[in-house]
Length: 231
Image (cartoon, rainbow, N blue to C red; front, side, top):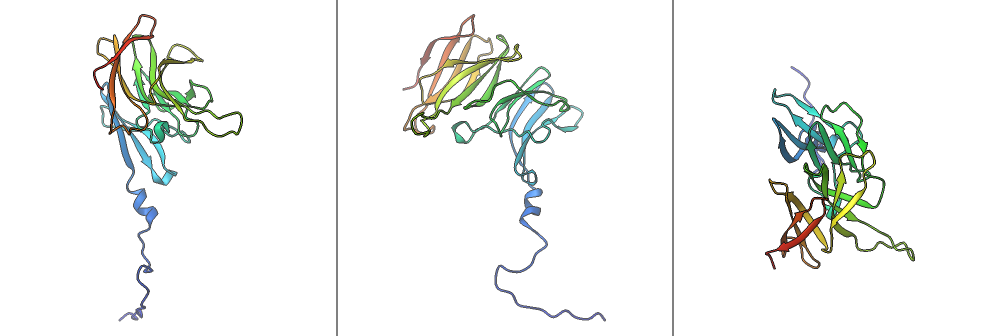
C-alpha cells in the first residue's frame, strides 16, 4: 500500500491546475478572412503563442497547408481602428498589409521569398485591397493620419479610395475618390467598367446610415459620374 497524501484546503480560485491560460490559447488559434483563388483556399490564422501574429495560410488542391508569411510579418490593418481583410492574390503574387508599419507588401505564393514593400513609410493605412486587372493596379481604402504643426496633436484622419500600380518598382499612391468621412468594400464589376463602394459620414456608425455608390472607370483609370441610389 502506498503512503496516502494529506489533503489540504485552499481558498476558492487558488487551486493548482495543470491547465494554464497559455495552454488553452495555444490550442485555439483564431481563423478569419477566408477567400478562394483558383483551386486554393486562403485564410488568416491568429496565433496567440506568437504574440498574436496573423499568418496568411494556403490550402492547396492536394490538401497540403502552408504558411505564406515568414516571421516577423503579420497581416493586420488599422483602418477604422478595426481593420478587416487586408490581403489579395493576383497571379503568383500575394499583396498584404503588414501590422507593424501598415505598408502594403508583395510576396510570392510559395511562401519562400522575403516580402518587399510596395508603398513607402508614411502616415497612411490601407485596407480592403482588391485587384483591378484591366488597369494592373490595386484599389484600396486609405486612411491618412496627420499631425498639426502647432501642437503636434492629431487631426481627424482622412479617408479615401486609392490605386497602387502593380507594374512599378516604386508605385505612387493615387487618390481616386474622396469627400466622405469613411469608405469601405470597393468592388469592381465583372466587365471591369465600374467601381462600387460603401461610404458614410460622421456622426453615423456604419450600421446607422451608409450609402452604396458606383462610378465609371475611365480609360486612364480615373473615376467619373459617381452616383448613389441611397439617401
